[in-house]
Image (cartoon, rainbow, N blue to C red):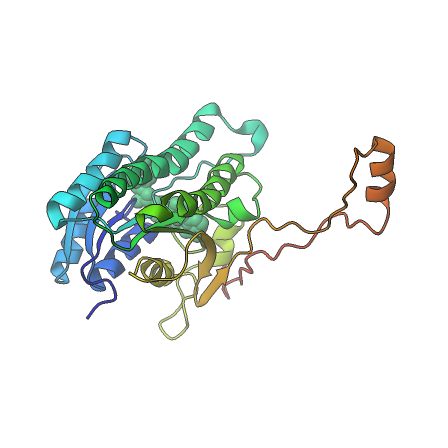
Length: 300
Ligand SMILES: NC(=O)c1ccc[n+]([C@@H]2O[C@H](COP(=O)([O-])OP(=O)(O)OC[C@H]3O[C@@H](n4cnc5c(N)ncnc54)[C@H](O)[C@@H]3O)[C@@H](O)[C@H]2O)c1
């Protein structure tokens, strides 16, 4: 008995990296999977078939609204329903702000933000129709954010914007779609995949694969159990953002109002300078970021 028997899932960007791991685990847990990527989805479908699972491939770019529709149609036509959408497809185009081109900015927002909008809107329309017809089921959305979106990162003006947007869209989706039985959560993963190895700083930290005896903390497969759990029927979480890598799972507190002052009148600039400039008003409040532990011997 798998944890996802009877569930139908779409996983975007699943031709490689984290998405491939998600698709393989969801299928191993009994889900029927629509595997999407620009290319390479068919190879992953073959892997799933070879392991005795059920999957179909839909190749195409997720920011194309027609591809979003195709993914939902493929799930319903091939497997009879849609319960889970894992929005995972992504690209990075890192550059310092003064060097970032319009193309770099547009592509990253297009794939992450518009891509997630495209697939999620198509799923929301299908789930709304089902709900109108009285067909209800536990539906789950997983969006893929990043520490770059929750804590920021130098050289990722485009990517941080997209990933911060996706974290809050998990909150929005959880509120808008609850009426159709949909839960929505986001993950901020850290794993050794191709784009991460190319990211200045992070590539050196997540390092090379470790020997067989060590726990390979940044192997991409460690992200998928949380994605699968969030996608199981009856999972209690919705509207949440999780940090995940290795054996770590963290629940974010979100933007949380810290220190306050209140007056029942307008403050003058001078008053604000006095009150906020005083030692009693903190100049920043601590946020707890992901604690990425360097892999021993990593340095490439
Ligand atoms: N690996 C990490 O440490 C890390 C950290 C934070 C967030 N993420 C996010 O996790 C997700 C997966 O990234 P990854 O690390 O596995 O990278 P990856 O490059 O290995 O995988 C991303 C996949 O998305 C596909 N893709 C790109 N554009 C697409 C499009 N328009 N339509 C469909 N598929 C498209 C790519 O072909 C690729 O297979 C991304 O959203 C990424 O931003 C990864």
